[in-house]
Image 1 (cartoon, rainbow, N blue to C red):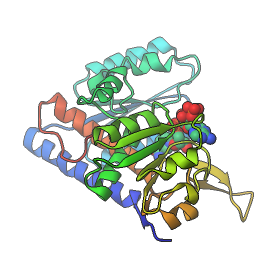
Image 2: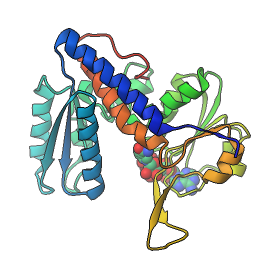
Image 3: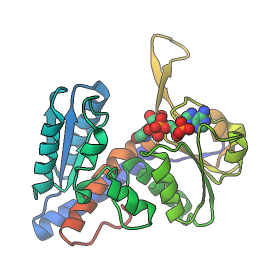
Image 4: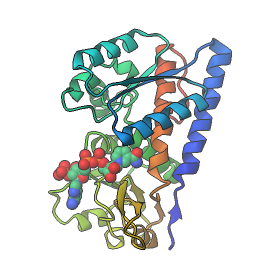
Length: 299
Ligand code: NDP
């Protein structure tokens, strides 16, 4: 295997340390403590784990963490009222409403009720529009993490051919916008793309955000290309069907044999997502107070 492994766990630790150092400076210099509010509606087990991890890492970075856990049956109007209170609270610089929301709640309505300046997930329609028009936005955390790793590995991304596989609003589309912002030549592929293998083979950078275990094989990868695997798929363990293991959207061994660099699953893109959430909260706080933004932690 020739590929350099892009260690997302180590990179995320570096980002968190950078955030913590900047937060300490804000406290010492201005008496400001960035605050992140997370709203969880219902008992979804995966969401509960995410929210717990977010809270722990927020506090470790020296920020204030505000958790709002609501019953699954909470009426939409009550959730909107909470969002309005958080919008008005000067101690809260970032608001995250954990998705998915229960079926009786209009997720788009709730997300678009968040003050765009506090929308640290970058899902508010204003931030989507700002990113799409190349203006200063709060950017979705997972693609921001991918961009940081790509910039770190390549330095300048200008002129590189990038193929993003997947066109979701959470990963694929914002990823493509970010790569375009760094002057890559960008192709977005999806389930209707003809000859996906040929499309991927022309890429210097492949970002896989598909949700199909090990779909992208090594013979789709141009020798020396960089492979960013966003996928997180739980599959039966080959040695013990009673157990499971996590795999990405890329077939790791065959891709790593051809690629120049690759992110593993787990330990690649995954850890960067919460690190970028903290980075976005810090950015939102600095913007709210008219202070310098942290260098290297924004798009
Ligand atoms: P979605 O299901 O919203 O989108 C998947 C995309 O993949 C769609 O655009 C779909 O195309 C495309 N697709 C599906 N099948 C194929 C195929 N056979 N060939 C080409 N394209 C295909 O997923 P998300 O974007 O939310 O997530 C993608 C993956 O990333 C998942 O594994 C998810 O768990 C993971 N993820 C990881 C995160 C992290 O922190 N590391 C965060 C978010 C997601 P079409 O639009 O045509 O249907």
